[in-house]
Image 1 (cartoon, rainbow, N blue to C red):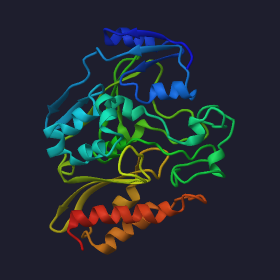
Image 2 (spheres, rainbow, N blue to C red; image 1 turned 45 degrees about the vertical axis):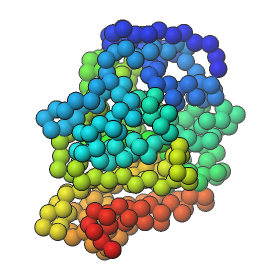
Image 3 (cartoon, helix red, strand yellow; image 1 turned 90 degrees about the vertical axis):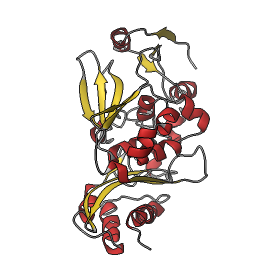
Length: 326
């Protein structure tokens, strides 16, 4: 790891001013950033520590929740308001990493963690995310963990965050502060598809800081669930994951949100799958239609084609529990 400067910021304005300078970035828990720097996947000349900015609270707001960017994953997962009102969020956080990492990692940092693609993490390999224009070996190489939707000819790396998938199903909004002032970005728009610029992964502008995540009040949130399928039981990223939030009234799906991890280059919401369910009884047939809609435009590779069937099975499992289908 190369040498770097370090400043502990005492105010939001000072932190933003420092982080707007080239070669500077924020550090909170550091559970991903320090690994990236150690492995050579990222290099920064200066780190701005934001742990003293008072952004760690979880508060209720008009029936919804405001989750500070510096709240730790374990703190949010254990909060009774989260467990009761947004179970999908608590379940996704508890399925993430290890207890030790959850005690250190921040909510904002989790949203900004970077792909676990081995080519990206290995500075000796070509990677368009790390070195634009160098190529994407995963397309023809080892791509078992890679995306089947949302990819491009430049990148098929999956986004690793369980939390982000759950927040997409909850219609959460990311609140930012930066040199240009505050702004709000729906979580579904926060992460970007790779397209021709896979090195640009989100909408953050230079110096911008995630200050909190707002989860709106919704009747769907109370009836939400998260399922994560992985290769081992702990500290493993999703092969596929499913976040569901829905409201069933008079035995019909009145409204629904479906989000997926492990299959997309960003946390993946499938409006086509939602449309296949909305207004219909929650039956084996309607769930099967939703699964087919989900993978209609999938582009599987030689090592990850199994995900096409696996994610449909996962969706069936979660929705069947919602509807009591056997």
